[in-house]
Length: 127
Image (cartoon, rainbow, N blue to C red):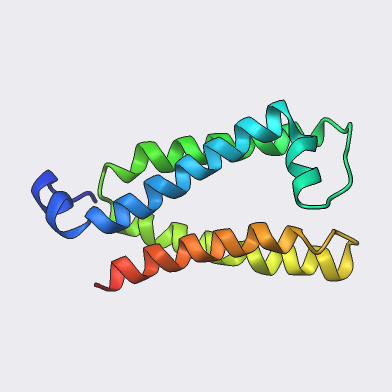
């Protein structure tokens, strides 16, 4: 169920903004991962790769970012709450990958960004 445009403007501006900003971050990350992934990897001290999977991950991040930016304008509180749960779980997955799958520790930095975005949305939903 969506809320009226008036309610969205007054009561959900901050959650909608937080989800939209996170969606734009994902789109920007996607563009980098699909075009110059090794530049980003080098910045974070992660080994360069020629694997196509990094670009697949970029495409998926971009599609999720597109959904976030497009759906944020609907003012759908249950969607906002769902994004908080999903984004907060990313750090857990990344920690498991670092501890048990030999992923570089720098992956946790991306998880922190997801957690911060989830925290921002959660905070605005409580207001």
